[in-house]
Image (cartoon, rainbow, N blue to C red; front, side, top):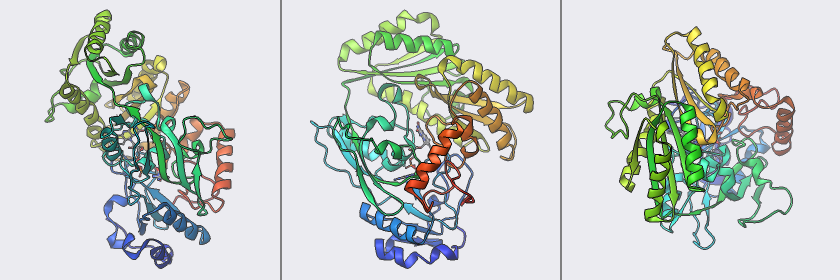
Length: 474
Ligand SMILES: Cc1cc2nc3c(=O)[nH]c(=O)nc-3n(C[C@H](O)[C@H](O)[C@H](O)COP(=O)(O)OP(=O)(O)OC[C@H]3O[C@@H](n4cnc5c(N)ncnc54)[C@H](O)[C@@H]3O)c2cc1C
């Protein structure tokens, strides 16, 4: 549902239509609901008065130049799967959607890179890479809608970080349109390029506040010849860490995922039309995947590894076939979307050293229970990357207590020297808490960079940090 168009922003519709074509500027009632709210997660709902869909990077640059000339605020939207409301628009903002930037360049298997338009979905890029025997080293449960531009803008993590790293590690070069309409090619697709500052890194993870990513060249990896997985149950984090250490030591370089799900989060799968890898009722579940190149030896090596740490395994199921591994992943990937349906809930994506995690979660649970005796903590995440997602359900019917819950959770995370955002970014939702993880000096430097790259402050205003005395658009 969209509110009536705001008159100020409507002044630019004709000029925007001259740049991208009348049919690619949507106004008022023509704007589909997907442009006003993140697909999942926050209940923050915006107002999309004008949506502009440029078809080329040059059109993106011209749209920005036009908006900069009129000091017209702009918000960038990819697939709207972000979980911190960064793309949620205010009524006075032009929504710049990347959906038409959907071209995928040629893949040369010898060079193993691909250049994708910002609006290409991660799933489409994965399919294209697979046709050449290659894989995109990023994987998220939201891949069907999440775009390459969104992944770059948020420095997305996902389930393969333990093996391959975050998006930042895979970007060879970027094409970025600055707020004033300059279109820049940053870096080269070459493996080695130490010529001066690596400016592209500044834009990766900047959540659309410093520039609009129009295309990215990503490094691809050879598709593995074998993929083997184990779904097991352990008593606690210490047991999971013992398993992690054993796999790393006994199958060096082969671990590509190490996902952990606590009992309450696993329970959301109960009663669904889904094959469960293990029965309900264990304290902690682990899904580990290893990839390699020796068809028989790899699964034997995994079995030998599991046998060597039998004492920590309460139960286990090994995937011998691709279909069985897919069953494990279907269960794991269903968990976030099922949890996100349990509104009202308070969702967190935090990093805490795996060594301190159990203590941190226990402190958090104790503080929350003192305030809400019925509280439920649903925890799952990427333990190999020190990253867990926590959903807090206080049993109340509204989200009025949001700030109270956030102070408790972020306070516990901060006291454990953790980060308030592991992979989802800051957007609007976490902005008040940035100071729990970043120093005043770091935040000041961020403000200086923003002032340099977007002096009129038109891009993604109010997201990540307040830059001046602007008010929140959404
Ligand atoms: C079920 C589910 C599972 C998820 N799992 C993970 C996970 O494992 N790991 C993880 O990291 N994230 C995860 N996410 C979050 C989300 O999918 C990622 O942050 C993703 O990268 C967002 O991409 P998007 O295209 O949807 O971006 P959007 O949501 O449209 O935008 C996100 C932010 O980036 C900005 N932006 C978008 N495109 C551009 C661009 N071209 N140039 C500049 N700025 C831009 C927007 O303004 C906004 O601030 C998950 C989300 C869901 C719903």
